[in-house]
Image (cartoon, rainbow, N blue to C red; front, side, top):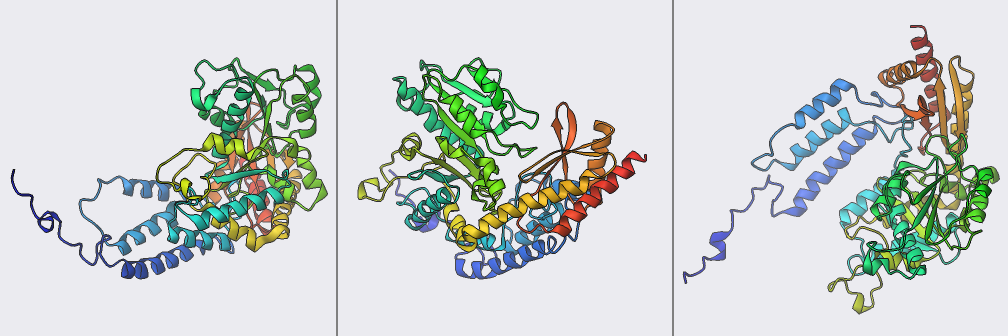
Length: 495
């Protein structure tokens, strides 16, 4: 056999000092991170105190940015400073200013200064927060945060869970536990045998449920279609909430079943009547699992205002809950919370054994969610909750609700504008004149650049959905938003 070549002969030459693969990482960090900080601050200066450029990027700027990306993969390295500069230029010119308090089209939120700073710090630590074996400190912080959130949202003592990438994944994790539990009650081990040959699981879901609920159902093998034979769509009120008065006429679940309820309709902010729905669900012979999808609305339970907190009365009687932290809590994307009164079932559904994870060394169990490779969301949430405290979170929730009501009130009196619903932090508006007028109003508002709004389908027609979900929003922003919308309505209707 030929002699093996020496290892030195097989290695490529050392990278140049300008290469991102430079063998001097300390100097690279000291050079690039201050630059990134300066560029980030320059971007944020476009948002506050008021946007200095259109909240939605001009179409030409976005098109130019996308066109500039249509290049082959570079053959050779580029200096990190040049890459950061190019990235900053793209972000500054072509990103929506979604962290701005004048971004109203989606329930997005906006990172508070402290939570953004914490996110940078945790990113620098670059931990895989999967388990105490991979990141013992961050795993411990997440465990603390799960307890804090359960307490803050007034969920039952002994509840537990994890942080996930978003409410869809949080819902899917809860549904995994739900599926396994109701099938186990029927004598079937779904974790061991899967769903092939399993008893049918009935699913009950409100007519106004968010599309992400059906995505989560599909992930866990229970179908994504409301028309599936095992799915019962519960009648909904005009607001999208379940019609509690219709429930007595519907047979309650029998056999393996999952019931999905909603805290906060995505367009109207309406909440299901949890006490009535839970009483109906548990009035039959079955023991269904009840999950509450509260992507933003579950935060009503953190409000010190009796009228806001009452929106979620009875939700504590469910088996599991999911909500986003990057919405009402305003931490950076992505972060969500799944919680259940049966944490051992969630852990069983999410567990996976690995010979290298240190479980045999007494380091505890893995995080009870779908991802094994995961950012240290718990440390960021810990920082946000430490900074705000119970009072600060409550004030944040009530502020969003109050500003949404202010916005609805300012629009209500406008000619050609009808506020269909205002609930929690959501406001749904219809523009007189039909879909064409509504679309033209939205386009004119967006082109004006002061605020960003969008249209949504409602009862077969277009409407405008306005979401107040940003920690920095002030009454001045509400006044600017209302004036921009009413001005565009007058302009479009005048022809």
